[in-house]
Length: 131
Image 1 (spheres, helix red, strand yellow):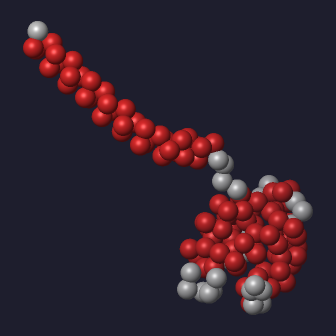
Image 2 (cartoon, one colour):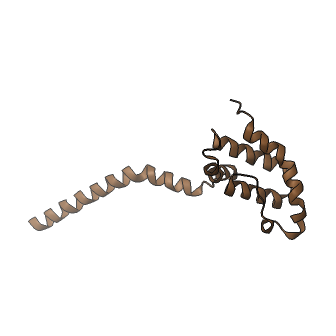
C-alpha cells in the first residue's frame, strides 16, 4: 500500500513538473510555429544576401542593397532579366548577369539592361542616404 502511495506521489510530481515545463515553453513553441508560416519577403532576403558583399565598401550596406533592389525591380521590366540582375547583385554586390541565367532569346538584352540600371546603381552607391 505504501508503495502504491509513493508511486502515485512520484507520478503526480512528474506530471506537475512536465506540465510546468510545457507551459513555460508554450510561447516559444507558438513563436516557432508562427515563424514557420512567415515567408521571408523577397526584398529582405535579397538585402540579407547582398549586404555581406557591401561590408567595408559602404557605411550603410543594407541601405545600398535595398536601393539596388528597388531600382532593379522598378527599372527592369523583363522578369528573367530582373531576376538575373538581382541574383548577380546578391551574389557579388555589383550588377552582374551571367548569360546562362537568361534564356538565349533574351541574352542580347543584357547590355541594354545594364544601360538602364547604370544611373540608378550609381545613385544608390554614391548619393548620401536621406534620413
